Length: 257
Image 1 (cartoon, one colour):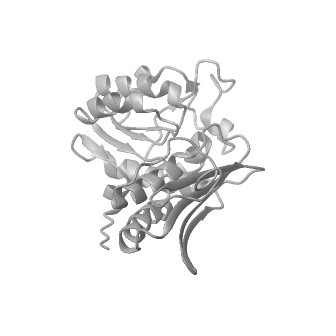
Image 2 (image 1 turned 90 degrees about the vertical axis):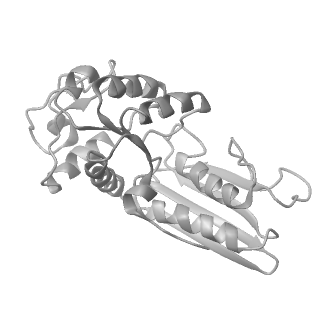
């Protein structure tokens, strides 16, 4: 994602990339960020010094790992810099850190920065409210074989949107939709994950009733959609007041059942 952001940034005339961060053990350290991204020299060396880079930035985009998130949140709070957090696999133990950061700086948490995925989440909430409780709800997600977390952050957000609309619990781990064996009880949201090949990302929400079903799907064919969405949202976020935001806020999506 870092490379996708670097490749996409030149299409945003109001935006300047002022720093490129990698983990302390990354082979990209010291190399020119543009050359790493395959777009030629940017005269911008990749560094692991987040605090140093923050001095010249207005907003940070983080697509690293959940293990690094607490440090990123602390650094952005200390430097008073807005943060778009696109990292997935965040655990509940980070919730207090997220809330603490949002009290100090604008924080947008976006497990999926694409416009289409944001709309899918809202449509899922609308469908879950509108359809009878007899319709089972299942979230299916497909990603490339190297994706570390399962289910994806987007799948969890979709399940959460459906669950909140129906007052149902959301499963914390992936598995077979419904019950592993035996009849499926009413009122349970299923989650299933598949890792294969180089699939960029696909999320489907199934509402299955007696004799009919409603299917909502978003397919990502190019990681560039996430970079474009993230950069657009970052420009918007840079002028917000401290608080916690999501892609719905950025897109001003307003839907009613």
